[in-house]
Each structure stands twice: as structure tokens, then as C-alpha cells.
Length: 111
Picture (cartoon, rainbow, N blue to C red):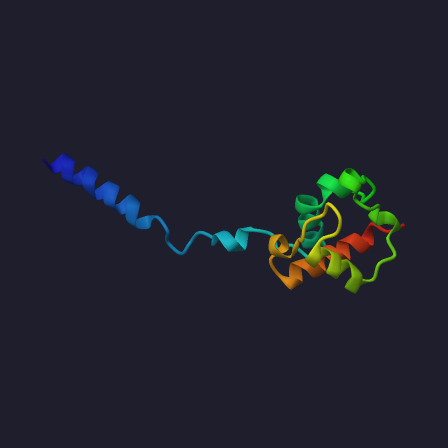
């Protein structure tokens, strides 16, 4: 009986030490993405299947983004409304900030 109480005490002590303030928070361990990295990530997930990593792929009739001369406003309009086979991306990108990150990344693909 004493041995059972001893093991129960050890088990309880182990459980109560879980989640103590000594370990780092999960958010602290994650690196923070820069706006450029965020734009590149969003582009990779949502745009590369048609435009390719370098913007030159042209799948499903997608335009070559490396040759684009569109302004930020024109790009945003296409992202919001879609064009030809490209669907509107505003719901997928969720926020204006994410849309701006993608626009800035698209501009880095220009030659």
C-alpha cells in the first residue's frame, strides 16, 4: 500500500510539473517571416501551379510574370477579380496585407 502511494505521488508530481513556465512558449520557438518571405510563401502555395516558381511557366494560359509591366493597382485588380482561367484570389489570400505581399513578390520575378 505504501508503495502504491509512493508511485501515485511520483506520477502526480510528474504531471504537475508539465506546462511549467520554465519551457519556452511555442510562439517563441517559431521564426517570424519577413514580408518578402510571406509573399514568396503565399505565391508558392497559390500561384506556382500555373505561373511556376520563376513566373514563366504559363500553365493554363497563365501570363509570364517575368515580362509583366502591370502596376500594383492592375495586379491587385486581377488578384481580386481573376482573369481568364485564373479565379479570384482575394478569398484565398484572405487579407489585403497578404495580397500586397504577393504583389511585391510578383514584382521580384520581373527581368
